[in-house]
Image 1 (cartoon, rainbow, N blue to C red):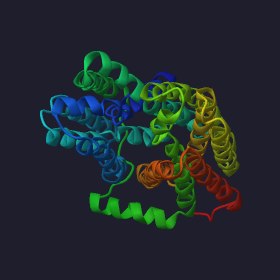
Image 2: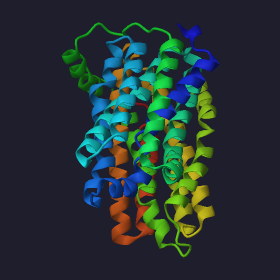
Image 3: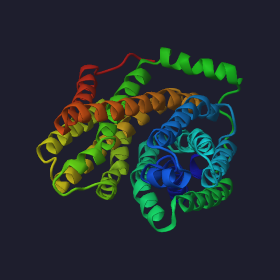
Image 4: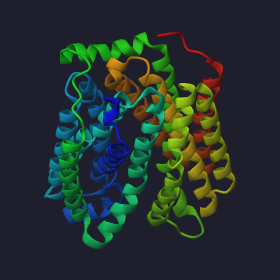
Length: 390
């Protein structure tokens, strides 16, 4: 089975992860145009990205565990095909109700990358697992960072609906490629769905190492998200009168950070996962926040901070996954559910609190919050030198 994971297949998995997850973020630069087209107010439009993320959270909880009980290739292909359908629903929406329903469905189905990652972990040789996941996670984060830039550019020239029509076509092509390129992977566990869902909670209770790294992942992503949520608000206060375009350019700068993921993956492979990587990565994120507090009025300073922030969150996240996927090979999808739900909750809290901090006290408060979340993770990683054996 490990021989089936060729470099070409790893690259396809990385592209699939990035292209699929990008669909969740296309809406953000397009909300104003959506509102003008459908004649709805800002309060209603705000539900579009919110319901997309709610759908994604539900998909993490309800669909991702099924990767352990179903044949993985079929599950991934069906999920990608469903994304195409959701994109078409959004593209043809004639009312805010249909747009909101399509956004919820879109988020629910875009969990395919979280099915791809456990599949790759199972196919990869143990000493190659971190590197392989590093490549795939590079694709995933690049999709998140570049999605807003791409949708903003295409939406400006061709309209917001064209973005979703084009995305639906790409997803159909991707679905066909995955169907023929991915190897079949038999179910990892013979289990019913109710028992599967009960076992998710059981794994969180039984595995202290999983709980620890879920916490580290949540704190790291909280710090990361605290930057992106209020960024446009901060840019608009600067003397240059910056806005969404500059935020998109900072997203491109952040892609430089994802290039380190395969390198970090190799380090993690060589050490079988090392909590010192988490400590150093999260400390780097805290330092990035310090830099962005000092140079917050400079786009160059923010760009350097973004690169460091992305380096840190990527390295910590990869090390977390290398460690937790080694705990129970037969339960990798369920373990990924526990980890990613914590990761997602941390990100949602970071985005919310980062915006509140900015609105109440300004950029310095946001920097303090982001640095505190990262520093807390670094302290935990250092203090808990060795989790109890699972």
